[in-house]
Amino acid sequence: MRRSDVFSARTYRSLIMTDLTYIRVEWDGDLAVVVIDRQDKLNALNADLISELGDVFAGLRADDKVRGVILIGAGEKAFVAGADIAELAKMDAVGGVQVSRQGQEVFREIERFPKPVLAAVGGYALGGGCELTLACHLRIASENAWFGFPEVSLGIIPGYGGTIRLARLIGLGRAVELTLTGERVGAERAAEIGLVSAVVPRSELLDRAKALLHKVTRNGPVAVRMALESIYRGVDTSFSEAQDFESSLFGLLASTEDMKEGMSAFLEKRKADFKGR
Ligand code: CO8
Image (cartoon, rainbow, N blue to C red; front, side, top):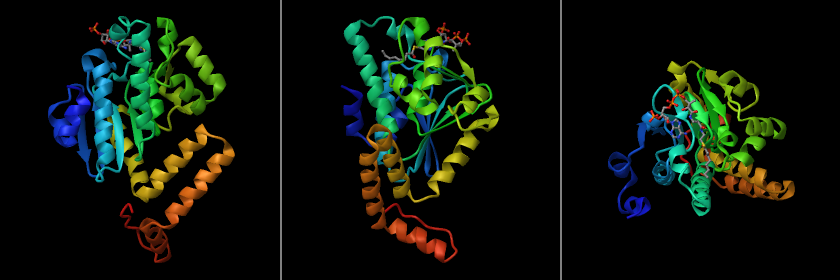
């Protein structure tokens, strides 16, 4: 039985409590904290872990109570130290395509997730781990974080969308240099080149992640979702098509209760109470 079959047969919160091996989810009001927990291998991504990640995000997508997600690694050393090299070492050509595709699809679901996803990087984010942060909408790091694409030192390339997303985020020149040298950059340098938006003490990482995400979730949820859709569509298409899409989303937003509430609240000098409709 595949995990997705198990998933469809139960509510996802009970699935999260019982069936996951490498991931746990903690709840804090309207935020879900997704913890990747495979500490003996520095949270390296094996096929089962990636599959669980896909199932968890599918569940969170359907949960109206969740307005934002934090992705974090368990333990003090790593966010995710990459794809599982022991598993990759066994793959043949067909397996290589499958492994890459599986990761690409799950990471794409995260990128397309309709609520903001923030990577809180508290240690190594290497290879597939760095790629995972790139699929998130927001990234902050603790002072002990390290980022990099060591793949070429293993005779492979980033295969979960990293060769595409890194250049889009930090620019072609820097992305080419990081990918071809395989060198790691520390948290401060990562902030300088736009890989993360803030560097915080390790002990404050989760609280600072929640604070940043709350700055988003206090806003109109439909507007946040559509802003994400418009931004990511814009990266993937021509400027004129992106503008058409932006206008149509704007039109849709004009029909929402949230727009009326947001504007009334401003005019009445009170805090908006958004319902997400
Ligand atoms: N895969 C498997 N096991 C790992 C990984 C990993 N990526 N990273 C760490 N581990 C394991 C170690 O083998 C070790 O296990 P054990 O105790 O059983 O020997 C345990 O985690 C602890 O690691 P270390 O003892 O090495 O810890 P250190 O503090 O000495 O070093 C490092 C930490 C520097 C992070 C080091 O572990 C390291 O270099 N790890 C590998 C980093 C790396 O190369 N990552 C990229 C992997 S390739 C990748 O991500 C490709 C993605 C695209 C795939 C597309 C599909 C085709």
